[in-house]
Amino acid sequence: MTAETTAETRWLTAEEQCIWRTFLAMTKQLNSALARQMQAESDLSIADFEVLVALTDTPDGTVRCAELARCLAWEKSRLSHHITRMQKRGLVDKRACPTDGRGALVVITDRGRRAIEQAAPRHVETVRRLVFDKLTEDELTQLRTISARILEGLDGELPE
Amino acid sequence: MTAETTAETRWLTAEEQCIWRTFLAMTKQLNSALARQMQAESDLSIADFEVLVALTDTPDGTVRCAELARCLAWEKSRLSHHITRMQKRGLVDKRACPTDGRGALVVITDRGRRAIEQAAPRHVETVRRLVFDKLTEDELTQLRTISARILEGLDGELPE
DNA sequence: CTAAGGTAGATGATGTATCAACGATTTGGA
DNA sequence: TCCAAATCGTTGATACATCATCTACCTTAG
Image (tube, rainbow over all chains, first blue to last red; front, side, top):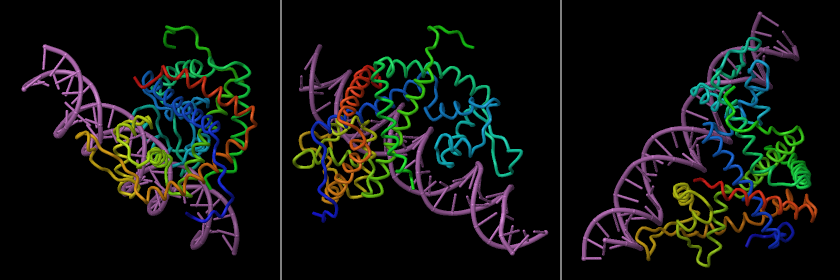
């Protein structure tokens, strides 16, 4: 219908389609399962968990918004909205930054600390059960190699 | 801090953490890259694409809502909302089901057909470039084995 | 010192996913 | 035959991600 300016499409073979569909189903269902588990057992989303992990990685549980956005690879807007919601739930708090009048500091609250201390072991246990316990040593090595190689090629595909 | 009712947590070793983080980063960035490509080149989301693929898999481009929801593994509510939006964009249409008064049929429109015929080759090309071209034959086989094994264990983790 | 340009974060609008509740219809068993 | 239960799809509420835009503040060239 439209002119093919590039070469003929290299469609996937039946074999390749099967691999691709299996891989997609696995990643999708694994993410769902991890999210469900954390929501059900700890009342946190994966995003909440990531924020809390980043905060507990520092000695005082305090991180600049910009730094947090960078290390989570989130848009600053997404972070801002998310922190607002987490603040309403009492998991984090916000403070003015003493060294930069534009800045804001995110601080983990006691409630936030209790939440992640309860969530972390259960999350790790789930990851172990669903992934690490299922694979042999060799397969884990293969998974790392494969993931790293694909990831490498994605660096050139950044959002502009 | 809280009583450990289960055994000690089997935390991930540094090695395991590295594998896990690499795997998570890969799947996340791969999904983003695929979504961005389809949005930029074909003005479709991955979800739109999946719906259109399911519709073109039938001879008349018509599928019952319930069947569509089942084969996409979507909630019926999500499908309903999504189809409404796709209908507004002229990609699909809805009809009453002649054999079941409760039912609804989703039909692909000419515009929807043109959209997927343009999108499909570009999507396949991207999948090839980002994944299949990056891996050896052996690695593809390994990826299938690994994905299948993890997926198998997830069947028991269905949403209730 | 001041004006220009950059950076930090907040906000509102839009599109999307999930959940609970609902009305309509079909189905299966008494 | 008739009613209760199950199924089908829709709707509204809520939560989340992204985009464009905005304000406040910092930095630096002049």
